[in-house]
Image (cartoon, rainbow, N blue to C red; front, side, top):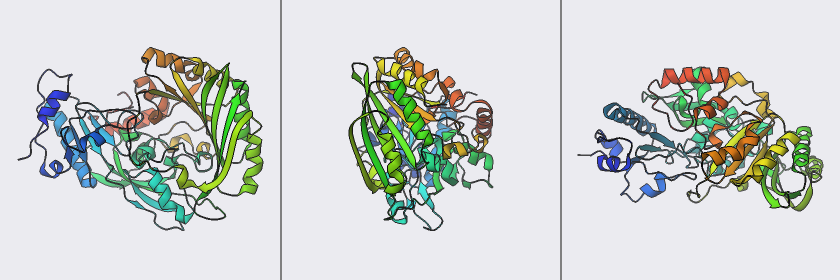
Length: 465
């Protein structure tokens, strides 16, 4: 007979004084579970951003397994009367920390990693939730197609298509979730089905930007644009520049103007760190969304005039080489992250970033360009509410306590008119209301009430009821 992980649950769950009466694990799930004493547990229990100690990890093989785990988790909660956490883990990146927990259940989707490139002519392809974006980039490259997906190849498909996706092609393609055509989802009642604009459109709307508040995505169909590279193979121009900046407000203002006036093929990601003597080192990654150097050169050369250049290197390279999947996801030292969507990249934003960098808790600041195709999509079309902002800003902070982290981010926070929930460790109700404000939040809450009335999917950033 299969037995429940009662001993592990008793040892790990510290906020209940009584023993949790976990039900027996059904036989199909017993074959896919990992307990703390098992060899695979260590690799599955933690994520890139957080160490976890769940009572049990279930590694799904198909959507039937996913449905069975969802049903089991709901039964655990019913029988125990406790809010036993259920976390969903796809690629194991998990910045918000929601992909693992202590004392609960982790549903691991990494085994659902099939990618089917499909018809090269229409650009449609299928990817399962546990596939990584580095693997997707490699699968699409022979068709000279690529899809924006962040800048880390180990991120899982499931987490990104439901949360956002500000990648190297954001200005030319929009967000990752803007390129989703249909999704296969398992809802809190354990049922699995495909949804799209015609079939359960409200749920389809909620899954594109609302994370797991509507259900667990197990398969995604997406459209990958053709890059039109001269040599094929999804080749892009990658321009790395290191700037030494004396006047950070002026630099951010000039960078914003440069991006604003540039063709949409340009995307720019910046990493900013203090260099002493009130100066800032900026590591820039400018990407041109094809390999047409004659078109890209004037824009990229103009970018060299923003500030003093210490080093630069421009290469034409397959996009897949820029987002390689890691050999293994390891847990980094603890840190806190905050993010903001800001209306305009100008001197005021530069001053806010300068203030953030002077705080003892701040490790670095990220600045990414938005606009272009991201802003082409109307706010009501998806559960991602931030469409008019020009900049995405994130801070990486040492874990010196909540008050210190909040203070380090306060200058940027004052300019925020939105946020990217999956790129932050802040999972408070106030943060959720900023990610999904106004009518977006009202609609998403209504969808969640309909499809998950008991709030089984309540880990990480979720709207308060």
